[in-house]
Image (cartoon, rainbow, N blue to C red; front, side):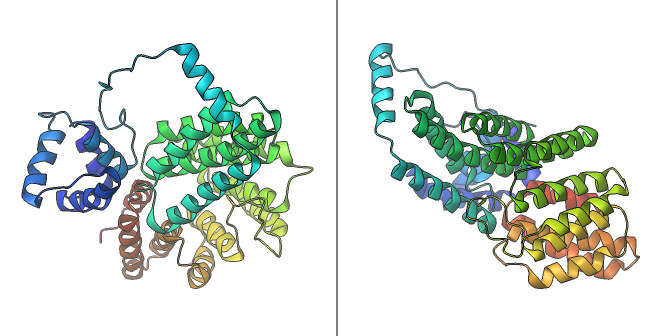
Length: 371
């Protein structure tokens, strides 16, 4: 099976579903697609390796799946343009010199806008955009000579890197996610921001979760918390404790109960912190997190927390809602309420398919309950 065909299998898409995704993205590429019949033939040739997709088709597939060329099995055949290295360097330095704080704020707003869209629409259609923003930021940081501008750009890059990594995890691209987290951590250090570094490390924990390296995940989140344990914002500390509790629950460690209580005690009354736009942790989200942990250890109290969170959840968090429904299905299955569990699993599957979440699809499959 070619990597391109494997990607469609991981998403659980039939060819008509892929065609619909390609049509939605075609305007961004400037392509006019033919009939469904002709597209089926083209896709088949690409997936079977009979025809190598051109650059426009590669971009379409990247937009549909959120994967890189390498992950989709595309070899780099583009010629490298000849240029004078010195002239190119002068141009890049000159471009970086035009960056000011107002432009950096606009770029930060752009990253946050992608984040809000990601919550509603899912990662596949937005990851390519996030990677493009990252590439621009990396270029500007590399050639920026002003320390304050360089640090501010690095802070935005760290935020964009963690967003791209989370999106990559969601489309099932763990190796890509790891690379983005490493970029985010390096940028956080350049920005001299323990908060950004702790956040990137805390999120990177989930790559270790997905690789089954839970002991390493626990060590990493504790290291992240140690960076900000004395001076970090309460919301960040609350979030890191919740990450630790989830890791402990996955290890079937009853310490998760104590860690959850510590996290709950830190949850601020006002959870909307403009300095932490990358953390969404309201009371409803915290209840969802607690319910998830309790479901992992087979505690029936998970159902109450998850049901409460479901009633309060902001509908814009579609991927999170899919995870919540999956947790409810797992908790109800443990209690033997299989018919009700199937209803929630069906809802979870529908939401996961809407946002193209390979990660949530895998979680749904792990419940082991037939629809």
